[in-house]
Image 1 (cartoon, rainbow, N blue to C red):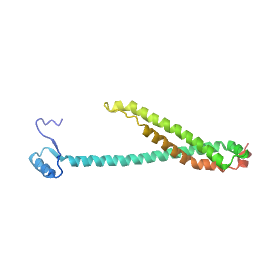
Image 2: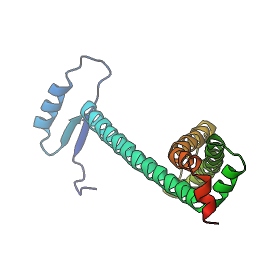
Image 3: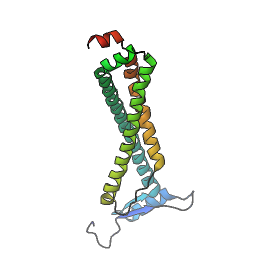
Image 4: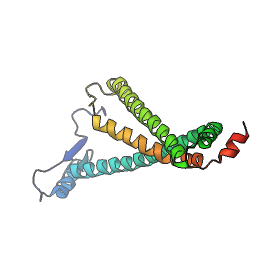
Length: 183
């Protein structure tokens, strides 16, 4: 690759026992073969592990941002739904529904929508993985992970419920006379 046939260009050293003088071996080989890059495998592994750790931290930040955006979208959607259904909520309140009933009704709708969204999201993610992975890594196989699916649906339900809590409580506090006045 480097157009240096017959020359050693890279040496990576590892040892099978704990107290090996790897640093001395690296120095001796570097002095004997100045054209070669001599490194200890332990250093390369530490460097790669550090890179993996950095990527893992970055992915957690991205997940946090996505979850925050998801919660905001759910909040805005449920709040818009409550505002559009003010008359319906007023009628419910006028015929005897209590605040708790209205709040529970909105929360049940939000949880059902979150379950459906979680299931569809998991299936879409697994479907995309099945479609794209063979194009990227020919020998890799996709492992079906039902526990991951349960976790995805549970997380969608928790985020959906938390983001819908304020709009549901707001709907329960609507005054029936104000809601029916606009009719």
